Length: 253
Image 1 (cartoon, one colour):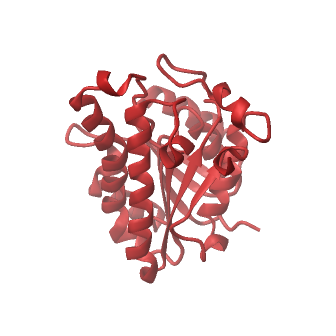
Image 2 (image 1 turned 120 degrees about the vertical axis):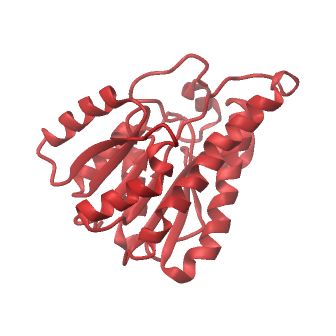
């Protein structure tokens, strides 16, 4: 059983890619999901679709102001806690810019921007949410990485993979520091899972993982959603500091 009902999740990277399937799974489980969005129109359509589907959970979207993204704004968490009573789960699924380039063709600015966008963004989101996570009886933090961010590889952007590796380092360090507070921090390393809304220009092709995937197929966004539901649930309380690879076995080779 996965206890998601009466729990409140703040989710960045929910309105595109595999995040769409994850937020649907959370709402199907009864969770209230507040999506942090940079695309209000896309978020509006997703909110209408999910809330019109009759799920036991509820979904809404918030956009940030000019100063910072919504997921990094402490005032946003105050609003959420006042409206829904708590902040129990934080999920950072922010995607990278993903431009593939050789090491010598990756500029210093590109490298720094990717690190700040992915690792820095996850850090700032966690920091903004911490005062409220400390009040939750079952606080969960879930950060998204990739198998190439964890193990290395050549099928994804160089700068993106290094930045995703930093997200894993953030996971284990934050987990060690927050475990005594009852806050778990875990990482999902994705591999070979296609976007719900199709590939963007410059994206790595998830099918490139198939030849090195023991299962011989790509994963589905719905499978990712089920994994995230477990990590977000009250039942996952003795798991922290872990990187769980949703990759069909790529990480074992």
